[in-house]
Figure 1 (cartoon, rainbow, N blue to C red):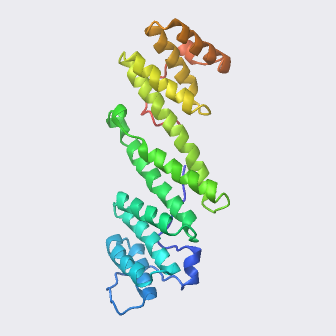
Figure 2 (cartoon, rainbow, N blue to C red):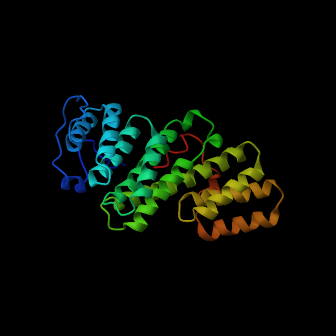
Figure 3 (cartoon, one colour):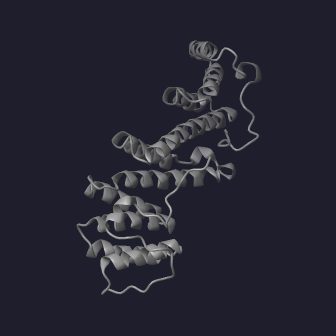
Length: 267
């Protein structure tokens, strides 16, 4: 699935109220005598050419010299984007949090929320790409949850924003990914004989991600774990729920999924 991302050669519509956007160009020399608008155009050129560190320095000057204006807000948003692209994820998120707190009525508030979600979302994808070589039970999914919360805030507060439709798609993806994560950990514990831990993680999947495809296997692992623990009543309850909701469940005939592929390849 391909998702649209903000382009460094684009600008927000409210920035057009300030001045026209400069095209992509070469590196610029910072001149304190230049107007904030000229400095901002230089910063955009630096971003367009991938010189994010230089852009950040110029944007900091723009924000200071144009304080209290729409241009200063634009510069702060662009700083967050440039910080993220230069590998300063934590700094970018802090910049966005500051923007959201200080400018609750900004025309770019919806984009700030969206960008916050995007930064965490892509951090999550970075983790997913390397999990096949690491112990999943030791990984933290906080970035996924943070991304979901940012997207949810956007959708709740700005349901008609041009970014909300994409945010909803990403929210669905995150929910399925988190459910798959919990399911994988449940499998991990079950296969190693840690049946109580497996039951606890399977129960999280069933309780917190009821609308995802992961629930079916989670119920099976729950029933099997309770069986190994000698908890017959709980086993029967889980088995009854599984059969009632998934009468043709493949897990009743085939057992758990085989770990042929990395857990996150569920599409």
